[in-house]
Image (cartoon, rainbow, N blue to C red; front, top):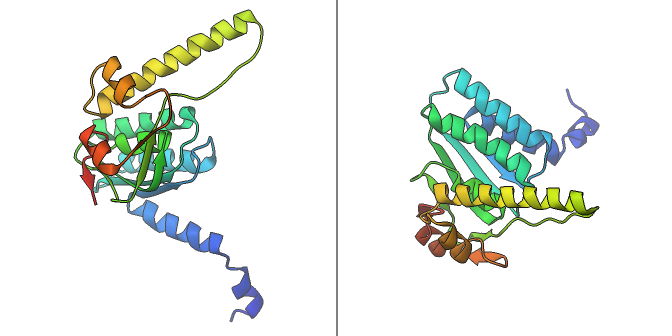
Length: 196
């Protein structure tokens, strides 16, 4: 029999953890908050790979509510998503609340026809943000990295939107400032397929 003290120790974090585990067993992943290089994204990547290895029989679903974050963990998760798609899995993505920066990219990375947002989702895309300092060679090296990352983002949007040229992407998506989109605008640009 549990005491009142035992009941008090069952925190909201425990309930959230239990819910996340139940969703994971069903191939549903909920990503919320800033995307960082932490264990939660690594857990999702590993779980998707295990599901592929075990011939999981259902499509995979990723639900996103994120203001963005770091590109490196996004590219790593994208590689796993692309691998899953290449072996026949559909990746359903759903954006809700706010999906900005890499959060919006994560929703767009789903299987075409399976990318949706709620009607009141706020969507924002933009160019890479960063900064550096150092001596001249360090600055040249950083500039090369920024240019390479921008090309990578252009290629991503060529693959995950209806825009196909660098000029179109830079004028309609990766504008000079944060580019906030209504769901209907995102659908017109081919970032999402459905508004729910």
